[in-house]
Length: 107
Image 1 (tube, one colour):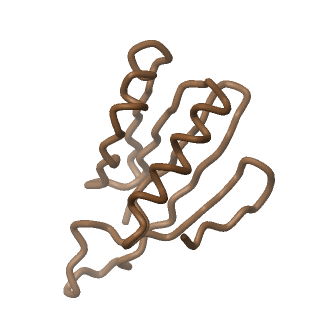
Image 2 (cartoon, helix red, strand yellow; image 1 turned 90 degrees about the vertical axis):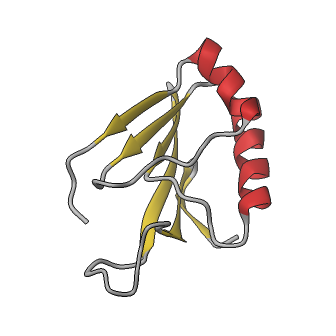
């Protein structure tokens, strides 16, 4: 998986937007961010890396298990939807408080 570490606990990757069409006037790939804060994990515009779905979920599950913190999702572009979180993280949502916020960004 092509994920790049900018600093400890601060990663990014590029993933294709599921609604992108060749006629769109915005790029196919979306910049996705993973950040570990003292309050939990924050995913910004999270999309699954092309062809690496299972590896992505394994890595995220391991991080959630290691940190024992809630997961927050921030969406910055209109029309962007968060990836559905697996049941292992949904369980933590009930007890830890998954928060999703949508921004007013532009494509």
